Length: 113
Length: 110
Image (cartoon, rainbow over all chains, first blue to last red; front, top):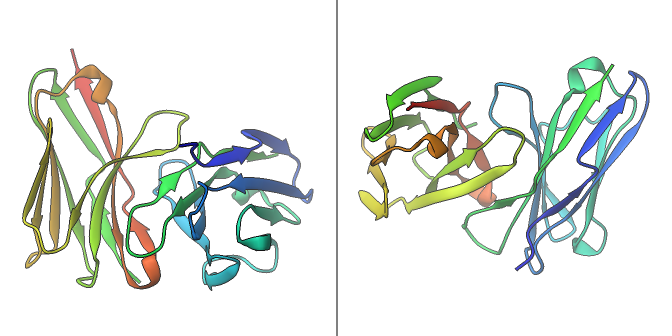
């Protein structure tokens, strides 16, 4: 079974630029999550999708972050414009229906200069 | 929201047992999880326990859950240098929303 795929793996941008990350979850997984992991901290949930609907985006800074999950499969997370404090690893995870575990992708490491 | 707390560091000698502790606040969690993160990698699920269980054993790993005290622990028997990593405790609440601790860095000395 293929795992969660993310791209790019690394991205370096200057502040005020835009950036987008892509995630392809495990086939058949209804729930998709985007997390932000700042160095030395645990993952913080940014947004959670159930199929192509948003379940929770309470911690997403909506003035600069946006995410979509078209057709309930792949998802993109965008930051526009980026700030220095957005430097982090962005993790995508997916899980099947019902209370269950979630499986993580390798993450995208973003550095904002 | 849920609060998940872990100690930051643990150092053990190779061959010893490691015990990593976690406390949480949300008693409605269905499952509780342990993840491992090696440098530069994503999170890897190690094991999880259903909330109506007290203990789960999986090879070298033993998970203990004290629901009354909201305390979860992970014991690694015969700890090896390859076990050096950051270990995250996580809970899931309503709508399958996950909360993670800040991680415990395990250092295994040869």
